Length: 562
Image (cartoon, rainbow, N blue to C red; front, top):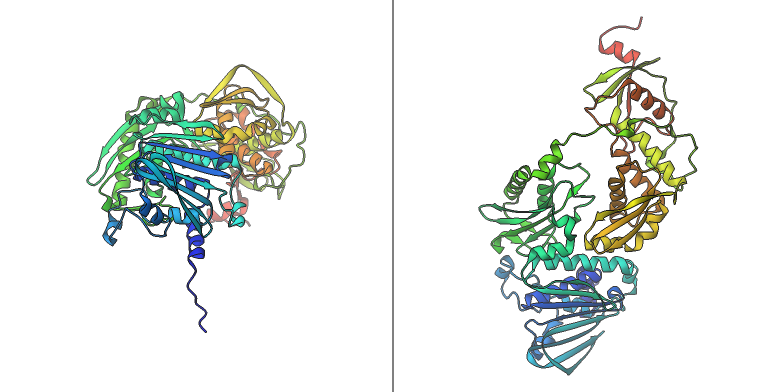
């Protein structure tokens, strides 16, 4: 007897659901996109327990009659494509006809719909049973999904906490609101409104709701011309930076997408203005003939392929780069004289020995050999320090050495001095988007363990007390560093989080390359580096010191050690 068997429809639907219904955000995305495709001008999303208990989507779009309603939960039943050629000219957000069938296999589903303002048809689906009845009169569709993954409890453990799931939904709704400013969107959880747009086509108002007044003031509109693509959007001043590409919003034909090539193009345009590890804030819209876009390469249609992608990347990088050069704030950011930080006066790290750390990290390994006794000779290109010792010549990277010293200093402080803080005379405001503040709601206690006492509102974090080891004048930069790590790396353990924050802080305002330093500063650098637990590498793994032994020098010059 053959071993290959055709799967039952129930099993096939569960497999399809695993691709389409990943989490609460993916459910909301699929259902709201259906509402947009149905020409809705008002869409409401109401959640109970962040969607874990109930997701309710209501729109005023083109509803379904009884026949369409019964077909809507069948796999590969759709009104958006008919022929194979249609896949190459997709204008709608959805087209596969999988969303409702997949959702019905993992949740208790109720769909009420009517194409005109008349008594609606209500379809209830639970496991394999279906029940059709008549409901209240309205035009549009309402979909209620309860007890997500009740049939596949193993999937529940992969869901994040309610607050994290809610943040994902909020992020998704903002993407949809930016792409479709003519639609009035509303999102609520437990009856509390989290997002509400007017639907008047004013994208700047949507961006204001997303980013707040402070960041909105730094956004500049731009438009570029290409043979096949229309490119337009907004870009932020280079001073507005983030630790990930999540605030780089990319839309193709009003579809929110990910495309590594275009994200790279935007980052390359900003390369002269921001550090390599940072990302700018930008909103970019591409409009083109749909035949140039392949949207059928990802189960959730998040990733796409574009025709002439290499040429498009060059156009975007060069065009946005030209715009940045014209922006006065970008120019002043590059040309402003960099004052020599007071923190160049190095302090000894080991006046108070550090406590044992929670976990061993790559940055805090014990040294493998003693630090040599060195005599300063000179500086090369304002970057490398030339030393001599008993065994030969040494080159020191002054920036890498300063990073190592600062890293161990911050690491020790964050291990032993947690909770010690200094009150600010005036609270410090750090502008954030609504999404970023939503990410931080569950981390207020974490801030306090690092010596930061803060409060949140919709568009800002207010700092009232700071750790005593923050350098005067750098409170904003240091607090923003902690915020970014808490947002982007919230699943890290405390010890690793300390390691990551210490690495980032150590790089800020350390001695840089191409910077002349005095002999007294060199002496302090040598003294403090010699006391480090791991003086031979910066916290990122680069060498601080390279040795040229007497023998190797003799060999280079063809001399013998007779």
